[in-house]
Image (cartoon, rainbow, N blue to C red; front, side):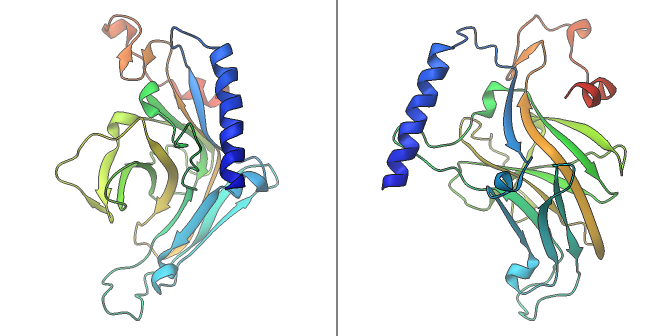
Length: 240
């Protein structure tokens, strides 16, 4: 109870500061979804693999000497002894579910932003970015392939929020309802490419952001081909 009241008091304080400094034109440019500069930051993350159900894959999340997070481990294709499982070989990390307080659910609002950006250095394996919003079905996850262009090098990956696909237990949901974007709970990364062997993915931060011409799903300026924001990856890699 004390922790709940303490979180509530801190939330009231933070909200008061935001109101005092409010930008009533709603010109938010970015929101840091996850920062991983220290071991303390990683305490807010959960890791898992098929080892949790009797499999043989492993997943680890560490801080490198450079102050970045490293998601690494080994993917094993060996099936668990439990015959109910017909496939195996996955690993994941994600942020903890938000803690509520007296004035807030602790969720963040992705509807205020157009894109999700990740600063990463990955190997050649196929990773997924996972978003969890407030849904009735606990296994519902919105996913998008992490499009790595330069394996082994740092790069900034940008994904529009409206490009994420709803899945449940790794299977694409046919109906594809809209994401509850005002109640985003967790963000994470996963690997399930069914390839035996080690893996490694480093990341520095995850952010939600707008371009100069967007505010969430809206355009700040009239839509024309000349004003359409295009991903300048070289510039983003230098500035973000």
